[in-house]
Length: 446
Image (cartoon, rainbow, N blue to C red; front, side, top):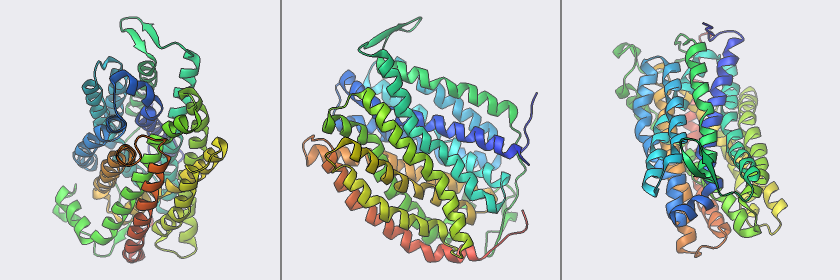
């Protein structure tokens, strides 16, 4: 049986598998944005009810499961944690086809959330042991590439399937009976994760845990060789201004990012009369271009600013990125030309997605080994609970209560103009503390 060790060139093999897992995870998460019109008609939902499927039903259980799973990842074999989670969410995605009511659909999304909670904390912790400090930013950026491509890929693949089906609204599947178009998309895109889970379980060997850095004033590991949740919470408390600023800034940013990812397909349908298949193919290209470049560029920008002497480079870059993203996104949903709207949206998405990678880099750099997965889980937990859980619903509530179900452009503008400046402020507040922590790092020669 092939075993791939986490050293030399093979570390990039592990990174590639994790990136693919992130890709599948993101595809699953954003399928509903494209298929929302069909699902809404199937179950007779309002925009607000549909937003709960897009966000809160997934994010709530993602958040509940996140910390316990991360603690397992900090103390056990991380590849098994990741592989098990991938298998679970893939099965739950495929089981969506059995949903006969809105409640059933919500339950499958909860199961998906539990499965996906395993990936990011395990992956960040693995990458921090596989790559030296000078390459970690790039590795995290490449891992994030899966999410950047995945959002657009969900639209592209879903749009391609809908295009192939044409006017066909249902298909007879052996043993499963007649399936609606949206059910067929979920079934098709849920299966590859099962193969990927098997590949990770059989070909990846867990790397040895090692401290990348010795941090002045860090918690003494002697209390528990494997670390405890109490240690992680004490660390968070001691550096609450830094961690808190990163978490708040990232959550506010994610509220806007997820709001756009959830509702931009519907906006394009309502504002320009596009079909779901058109949106999937055209908007999918825009999202792939904007999202894919964002995550990789973030890693290089971090290293570039570090090389120029900015010890707070991940968060400094977040402030700059959001300052550009805010006006781009507002103009994107104000444009009266569909092509111009797509171009501006791709550019805005490029910048608004960057802080996710920047924040992950900052957290991994200032966190000791045995708390890395837990701190990553705290970041991902709040990012999804408040970002994914609140973002789509915030836009829907603004639209339903203030603008009476218009094309969603007004709601997206209001959310962006109100929330992104607060995210910038949160990042600015935590910059001095981040500088202090990173300047105290001593690299023992990983």
